[in-house]
Length: 240
Ligand code: T5A
Image (cartoon, rainbow, N blue to C red; front, side, top):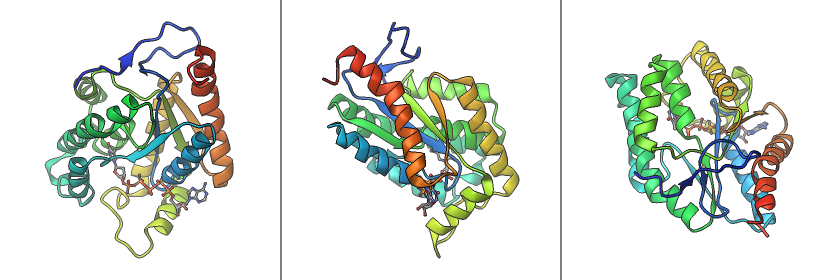
């Protein structure tokens, strides 16, 4: 994978990370089970449309035909017996295809991309669940993504019990997946792992209080998009 869409910005107001060519921006939504990412993605897409910005909403694991096949295997629990590192490799196999076949082509077309989960999910889930060495995960991320990263990551923070209750409502009578079946302790570590990521990378990450009503969560997230991405793009004249 190359970094053809990546370019560094020397602007003081912009975070020190890759931004994509033209006006297209890559936003990732992260958080524990039932945090409200899918719900927020729909709202953000609508707000962007009201600004005349086309947007593709996608998800991980999945988001491309081949990655969707891997999703079934992962969420069905078939890879779990191979251990957390094997799981991380499978998430990355899916991610490489998703980035190459779906995300980068959309950004090249000038569409913004909102992705429900991305690399931080591997850090948090495989890191928190499997206690994988963070340096190992960082190395995997470097090799697989070659610097390709989100322009903005919204971390939806919600108390564990609230998130699990919401995920149960969303699931209805369907079976819980391999990660929803983990105990409360795992989900508590997961929440901490996401907050740690946000603390370490404040230029990329914004924590959103996702325990609020969906409309309030959308307003908070939209404020971050305006402040971090739209105002910067306006200043550069690329949205006019
Ligand atoms: N995974 C993924 C890894 O382990 N490593 C990785 O690298 C990657 C990429 C994916 C699983 O894979 C793991 C993480 C996951 O366990 P999934 O089915 O895609 O599995 O599951 P989630 O991404 O967790 O999706 P959920 O649907 O559970 O959560 P969402 O999308 O955060 O929540 P959403 O929007 O569907 O909402 C859930 C319910 O809550 C309501 C909604 O209406 C819905 O009923 N809701 C709210 N209710 C009250 N207030 C709000 N603010 C609400 N927002 C939503």
